[in-house]
Image (cartoon, rainbow, N blue to C red; front, side, top):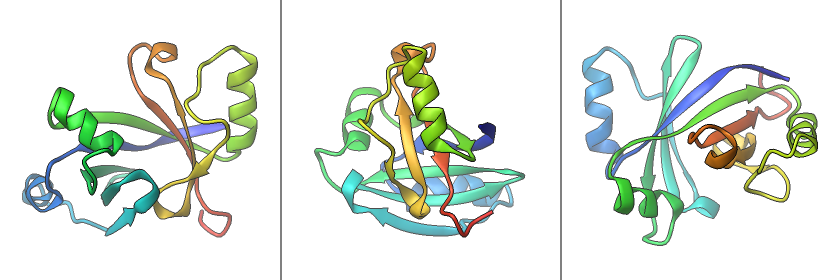
Length: 136
């Protein structure tokens, strides 16, 4: 079941540059990690019960590099928190919603993730994310 907005993903050319605005607002980067399979480096910035995720490409052929080339920096996706991503994935497929992956995969922070195609979500790329079993 979807129970919250987990984070807003923002594509940036540089995490070091992108984080400055959020830090000037009193927010702090919680951690930075590389998700090699996606060709991206991410910085998570807590903001209340949600987070802002800065996405910096590490390869020219990564989805974030392509997004930046086509659209420039800005909001890339909205992520909804799930407590059972497999059930949510099945429900979406049964309703005819177009998802981007054959099954949920591992994303930042070890979370299991699935993406909903913008054509099925009013033009918004939606990510569903279930935290690892040992996380709240």
